[in-house]
Length: 224
Ligand SMILES: O=C(CO)[C@@H](O)[C@H](O)COP(=O)(O)O
Ligand SMILES: [Fe+2]
Image: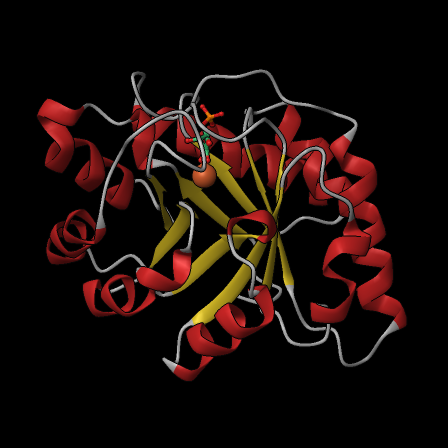
């Protein structure tokens, strides 16, 4: 996962009444990771899924699961999210008083630990964590909802994180982007240095196979 290029469909935009159908279509189309947004209505003004939902998804796919925790005091959910089958857990810096401890706890549970930067959160806020985190998720929209417009200014943050990793041999994090990713914006993200690409409304509610192919193709074309 560290340097692998991964397409991560965000379940938030899948059809809730046909979730299994949508997930299995994305799985068959070559989804590399499923991104699951947990929102508690406190850290962000929206309510979504809990750990039981992750467990259900885990039962219908072999694709690894990325839990994006938009909850206050995420430490209360770590054990249950791991037990539910998450392979990567991303936690917002502002959601806990003890971000270092939260990262350590996720890693103790043998799961990859990521920190999330909101559009208004700087790299400086996670500087003491850069040598221990497995992933950094750069929000390219404000957290809480799918279908928002990509904030291109966040590409500076992505490229700075990529440069810092090159300059420090002990920094091994992957770089993930989340929000407003489509067949155009994914190219900007890749050029800036991201390698995990979350896409919700671009993938679901459309021809899922075609949309995942478009994202992969955009990356292939960038490489060639
Ligand atoms: O975390 C979030 C939103 O808070 C995302 O994961 C969204 O689900 C992305 O949706 P799109 O912007 O791709 O529609
Ligand atoms: Fe997300």
